[in-house]
Length: 264
Image (cartoon, one colour):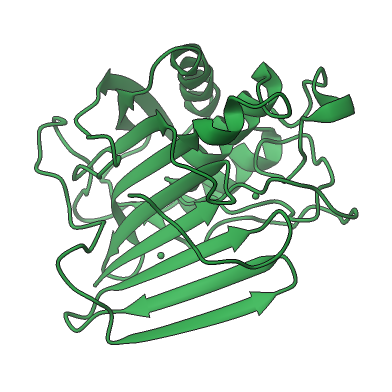
């Protein structure tokens, strides 16, 4: 199972449902990092600990296989809430509570489609339980949340395996030893090649990871209008702010809609 400045939040699901084919393309509305050349280097801030260090290394290596990008792991610049830093992706783990999500990805946009900063959070509240404390599930969720931060959506949201980390297959229970859906596949790389086929006149990438944290949390203001759409186990929340910015939250729930909690 999660966007002019727009924040997109994508949540990894906690359970699976019936099967359906993968989409022909899973670009997330064409959102992408602005850059003037390919391949480009995207700095990934390492704020994780324990087993997550190796899991992040695997995800970085997997996505660097793409022909259009190189992910470079750098020292994290975030706090416990995993606030974002301009021009980078910050990756964090923490005990975020019984929120209903395993992982959460957030991006800010400028000009409607250009990503300016991102974050990916892994929720140890669930990963410390027997159902989710396995390497395959950790790799699945980490790979997916990082993938969202450069403009990929889900290949499916029905619980079937497309043998890509961008699906909603759950490596739990009887599947806990099953390594499928733990890495990107060629369909993901082809989608990225399409998303990044053009070049931009300027870049939103950081030359160094020292920029001040962005306004991702929007703690300073409240939206003037909100819209929420519930569709079975899927929810989209749209929040609009007076300065022309918006925050969009996309969630696939375990048991059905509930109050959306994003600690970041």
